[in-house]
Image 1 (cartoon, rainbow, N blue to C red):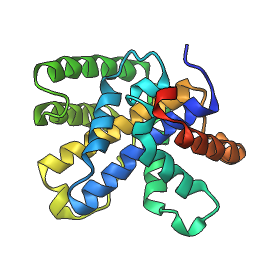
Image 2 (cartoon, one colour):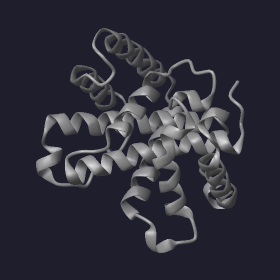
Image 3 (cartoon, one colour):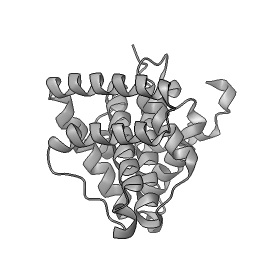
Image 4 (cartoon, one colour):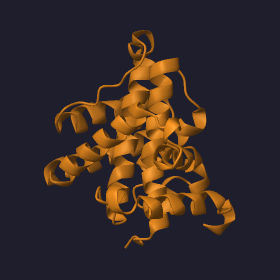
Length: 212
């Protein structure tokens, strides 16, 4: 059973925020840091992890997500990004609907396991694998309710290469939100426990990789 620690919850949530950062980069600039893509893919295929950190191949791989969370909810309000907040709220709302839909959960698990086998044949970041994961998002999560509207430049979003990566990243964001719930996370914590969450994010950032 996953430990319901504040640190585990913030690592999981950081995975979602990091996926959102990558979505925004792709939508506005047509590219994103390769490490963000690799971490998202690793999280989707880490279906039987020993701990939360293993989902992202180490907590150091969600540093961008941790720092983004701190900027969004810390005291320096001028650095908050409304677009990132909107994506986060939408992801959490979709995860809540997914949590109530056991049939869709089962379908999602089965589809990701098939994509995992495909990734072993090609490679996790092969365009066929990413296109498959994008299709999984389109066929499952997109049917849960209002679709997440991604803002950006049409020239970037209309490219299949980028569109597939955006959907894959949104799927990784949902996976991170599911993990957050498994760690005891809930939306009420944003109201009552934000200070504890920020402190946990800073602790994780200060923890050396070899202490996982």
